[in-house]
Image (cartoon, rainbow, N blue to C red):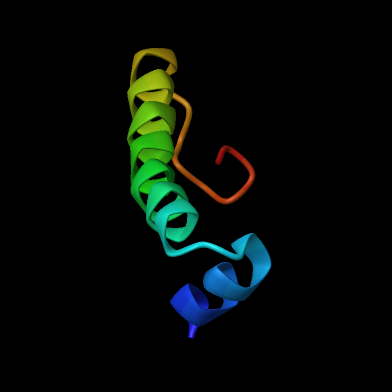
Length: 46
């Protein structure tokens, strides 16, 4: 369902895969930034 929505919005399968591959990397970056500061991982922190 989400992949279909992204394909409709972005008009391209390649762009859909790009967005889908970058999102997990962003979450990893958030976790790596929160660990040194000791901030709990929550909805507001993300």
